[in-house]
Image 1: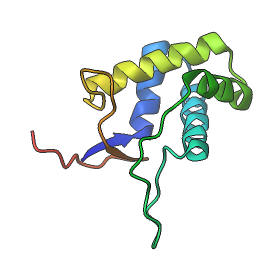
Image 2: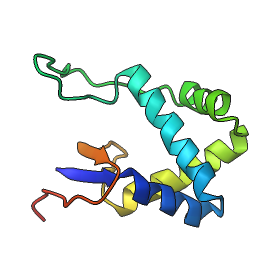
Image 3: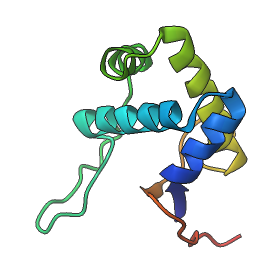
Length: 116
């Protein structure tokens, strides 16, 4: 399984967009809260079996959530989302058709368990 290091993502967003590490971190944190709220993030709790149903993201709603909760301009959020997508493609977390491959995420390095 692939691994997404949120701290590495934060650094790369800062590098790709020229924004501060603090701004990139705020974006990543608020977006992660949105994923918690919408059921994208799944946490392994005893007795809690995640749904097998796919979760869809309303991109417009997500952008507005980040704008409202991070205090960022929409154009800045869109720039960060573009840089994030580029990062996800570079790390093979997005399929050629634009879908996401399953991945774990955290804050700190962890080796991929993918068979390349």
